[in-house]
Image 1: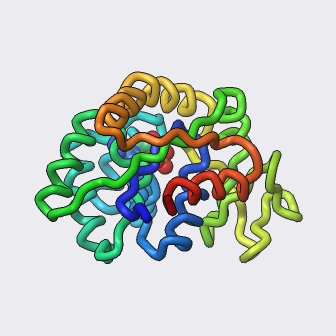
Image 2: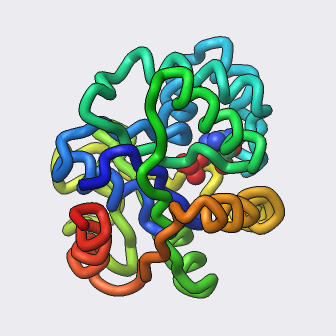
Image 3: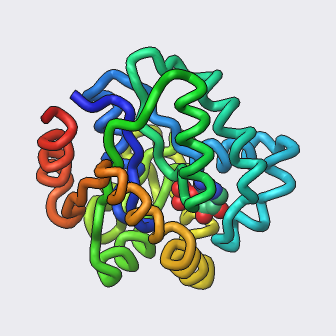
Length: 216
Ligand code: AMP
């Protein structure tokens, strides 16, 4: 079974929700850099304040700041049985850093899962995404709408759209993805770690495809 996992895929490909389900299935932590950064913003930490603007515009936080954050997130989580990395690496230099970082800890990656989804589907998923401002539950107004518009089914909290899910930021995120993140596929393909997974279709079907390769 593979337990040292990187999740790749464009914004809106389902990495967050599939990653959460996979972490419960494997019993290993998920380390999501996007979520960690949103938490830094909410807590108004130095990092959060410095990069709030960059993140809301859909641009990338500088690599050196990301390396410090990764170090901290690995310290904070119990990775004895493995981990799922979501949102990191996002550039080839970050992937090189990760290789060295893991090898210093006597670990290495088992697999890089690439969830691929058409651009049309990505735009629909991102534009429809709404998150509970209280408990963080994620909905989609097209696919998994709450029973009452704008209100969380779980806790009654107000739903809002992520700042970087708004149209102009999405364009930047997709172009950053194409320019900087896409080359990662070749990086992991050469190392024979890349597995492509069709991220379209029902949530449960996509999850079955994922565990099919992780359990192998
Ligand atoms: P995500 O939730 O993974 O889509 O990340 C949201 C935002 O956080 C991204 O658009 C970036 O601004 C920032 N971010 C997350 N992970 C990274 C990373 N590995 N490198 C640089 N910026 C990141």
